[in-house]
Image (tube, rainbow, N blue to C red; front, side, top):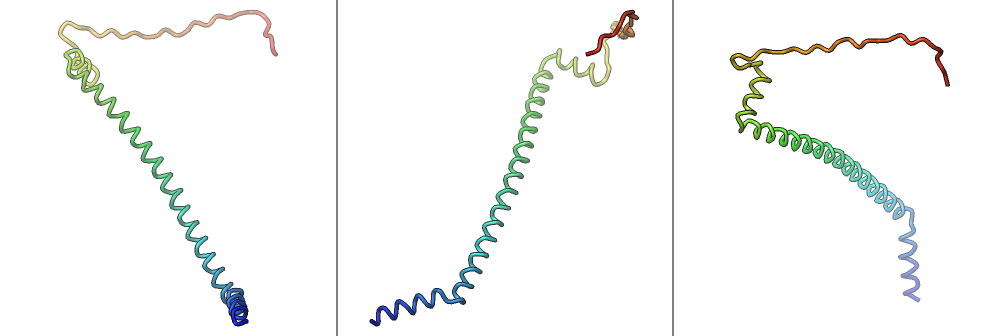
Length: 115
């Protein structure tokens, strides 16, 4: 009999309004912490994507620089860089400028078909 009364007292304590309010407050705090963690997770994902994009840019730049460095190891590459950057020519060379002519338009007589 005492065991049944003890069981009822535990049950009445657990279902009391005070305990339910405490449980609801704990649930709200846990939910808030979960949402904060999710926000930090999403922020870190966006930062990781930005960092990966920057890394790809740096790797592309590295490839271009290695290619330029390999060009500078040859005489022809050195000459090409000098010609590009400083407009240098060898003795006896002349510069030839090629101008594009304006495209000629012809008048066509006839009717225009429309869709």
